[in-house]
Image 1 (cartoon, rainbow, N blue to C red):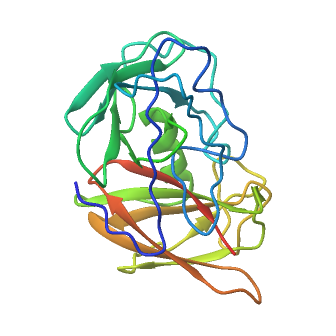
Image 2: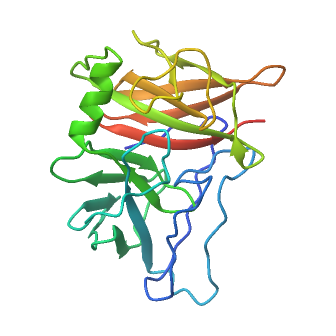
Length: 240
């Protein structure tokens, strides 16, 4: 899958699987780094053999908190990146050979879960949500997904902190537009990002979509993201 980038920088950190905890739950960061500033530290060690890539699938219960992983069994989840494939251990950790290519995109699949898509970034923490939980969330917000639609979740940060009060538009336009985190994990707001600073586009058209993020008295940030039918794309955006 090709990812078009406009104001987007996708960087890759290649790591060996045998040296310590390379995939902590990084507060304030997921697997995608977007200019003008990265959202998570680069986890690279000079001793790495640059042949394997380690990471973790983060099973989440609350889509407002995309780096808060549940503690249950996360084994047997399939992770793909380009031509490489791996399977998770009980804690969701995985290691796979470093693939060749550019504009690479993670794909995470497992029975009972909504497929995840994440453009390759620095910290390989890949959110995954159960189908039952996501269907409940869609129902609570009156969303009925059609064939040829996928969803986008974007954490918006500024100076490494959640960017409260951000609004968003999507192109191509969608029926529901942008929804935002609020006090209720299932029923989302329609005004602007709350304390978790997450934007949800539930019904984006498959292909590519341009998300415009705006905060008062600041230059808007535009990012172009992949949308896969029946999947959720996760990304973190650092806004000026």
